[in-house]
Image 1 (cartoon, rainbow, N blue to C red):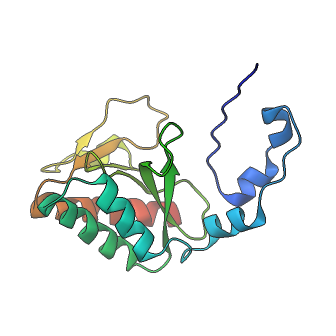
Image 2: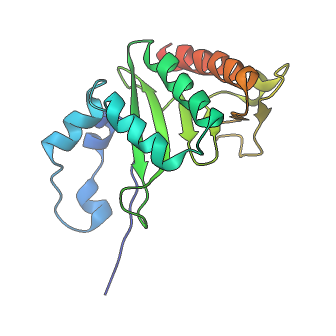
Length: 172
């Protein structure tokens, strides 16, 4: 028996350019509906996001902070949320990628709802002067060098400021 796990992240255009058949070692044809759901900014609705947050985020005030974060970021208009489902736990989410459309780069923020942690597509220098955010100990070529944990209103405000900065950079 042979098992090959492949995780591919990228824009639909980047994925189409890959030689998926070579990666998988067999013929591959992606479902059109899957590609459409991933490219449609409105494809991931509020009810689905709420269900994920209820299942994954701790209850109480901290979940409310996460909901407020998503309400604000999604209000920017050209933003979509893409879940990364756990391979070992069907129906459970590892993290949520928050993208700006059109998708020319990766997500501008990764949200880990179970830990209330957000990783931003920012250089470590963007964390200087931040009260709550910190530079992550990652390789220099890792695009997600700034992180914050949502704990209260002030961390939410800082997370939204950093998200806006990352959002602007991926659109540039």
